[in-house]
Image 1: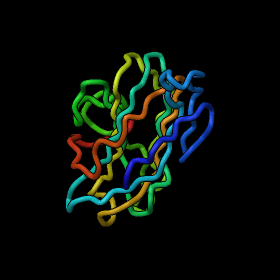
Image 2: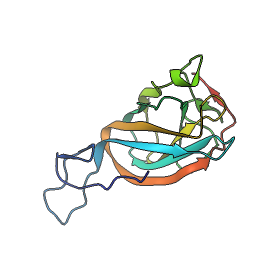
Image 3: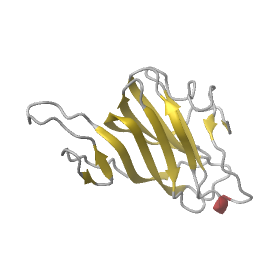
Length: 177
């Protein structure tokens, strides 16, 4: 699935986006958005944990919430947040190591539809952050699935875009913090 286009306008929501107030002068740059949410999906190669990666320019002092929910039955999601300059599979800010975050539990692949959520994460350093949403192969059923991703912030941020689609995850595993 492709990254949605963004329509810039002061204080109006488009395509599931809630936009922050923009500049009064059309020649000045827009301040960004305070919320992003959209639906995406995975198509994973056999025996591969595959991920979609989204890049965002986030200001220092922002407090963000990340949600992956409405995960299709049969898919198990995992989540990672990477700081500016950290490679995918490097230290995940949500776990403090190279594992992805997964706290949802179930006895079968159909029981993981709730997804993952991180509330009130304080951003210390400004820069481009990467959010990876992974479909874990071993517990999921089949090779495809869908999900809804949301990013909300107390300060406006810039949507850079989806930079990876269905790429193999470089994370070592998963854990719940």
